[in-house]
Length: 122
Image: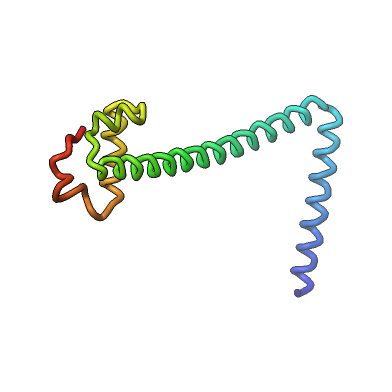
């Protein structure tokens, strides 16, 4: 590092030290400001943590729906009518239909063929 760069770095450090000192003096004059800044920082972090937890919860819902969809398809593969699946699972028809569509969308074999093709579908 050349002399000019060293001098600039020294000036930058001195300026940073002065800024820090000025901030500390200002905060001593207004202690409520420090408390306010801490509250703002804490609230900002709380939002970030909550949003991460929300993303994890959304992933858990997606995983659970995929598992439920696969289980419904196993019931249908056993030649149960959708109305029987609804009665056995306690899910409503719209939910069963949506989960079956989810399974179809995520499965390369779209639906059941052969003997299972005449099974009542929601």
